[in-house]
Image (cartoon, rainbow over all chains, first blue to last red; front, side, top):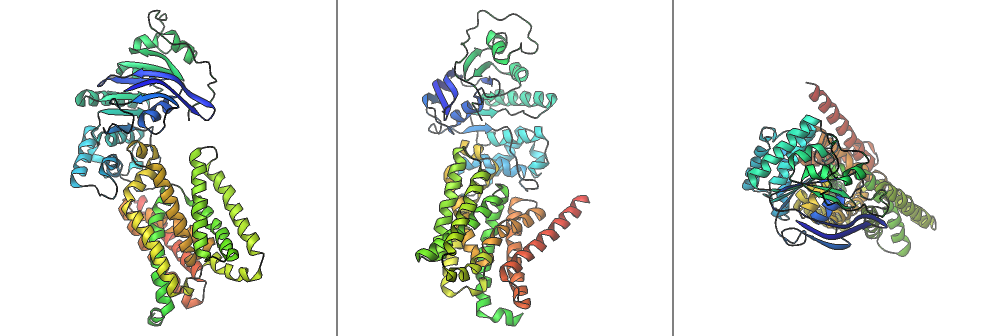
Length: 260
Length: 269
């Protein structure tokens, strides 16, 4: 997964300025940054939902949507109208629709894959339960099962633990990492939970319209860029800034309300 | 009852109403899921502008309303997708504008006003053989597309970003759904009229949702509720000389309240 000098604007509002980064296959990279830093925009570029104004985005050495490889996507959550009778199984089955094509109905094999995916996130026993009746943590596990059902080699997660308590967040990331190791997945996760992702990711990318710092989590957390971006030292980090870590200067453009 | 069923105009009304009811019920599942009830109201009232344009320009009013409503639905969809104006605001602009256009055009001639009542409140009992085949074609096409692309529309309604990420053509599907909504609303104007058509898109689906334990069951129960409303509503209309559109919607509402009550009692035990 590679971005080279990527620029993106919503009208006159610049969201990303010259973003370049690379994530090796089979690794867990976490994208952190404050609100409006452009994290969701960057994920949408990777998913092919948005196109860059300038620069290149490539997955598996191809532009998004052209590589033919299934990509698993885990959103922040899905909000259904109250009382809508969508089951857990229905939600996971949707992960097969992209490869199934129009008109065709899900086969017995598709349903077997749904059960296997639910089993991987230990939710198979709740397959028939209504999605809206699950807790926030359980819903996120179901959305991971939906992402896994197409057997992807890349999983993109957009703030998957927003709204979860600390214990549920720790369980979530632990389980995701187990899956990553077991299936050799590449994980790319945008998150506000700096401490949680820093414990599990191999690469931490600090985004604030541009990449301000990138590298092993502890090095990024000790960088001057983190202090500048968050305007205070990160939690549990009272050491001096690492003078050896290469960090980028802050962007000059106005940052007000850049990303949705 | 036998006399009711033996009348030719009643048979045509029952057939047309059943087709329209079934289409509205299936479409209503997506209207409820995507929270499109207000856009349904907007399109149905915008259709009045299309009817008026048709009457003034000498085109068939229903065809003119169909084209006009689809265009209004696309413009609302396009403005909303651009993200500059919210969907509510876009509908709030186009709904009164198109309706004002209709009122202004109709005020030109008193003869137009007489035909207007049928479009405002529906008159399914006056469906002729020519109308019947046109409505069968429209509703059959809408129902066919909804059935064939049901899983894609469901994914789109549940999680549009996820559907895009999975490679589904979300923009195309959104415009297609808006087009089906507009065409169905115009076709259903014959059944319940502009004023009540949006209710017919929501009430049977809400009844289905209150009783169902799965999406499939919701579709089936919505269709059954719509068909029962058409049958019972027309019969009551014939029996007590009530306006047919109002009878159908009132019966649909009675079914909804009964199902809601049942669902509430069931959930307490």
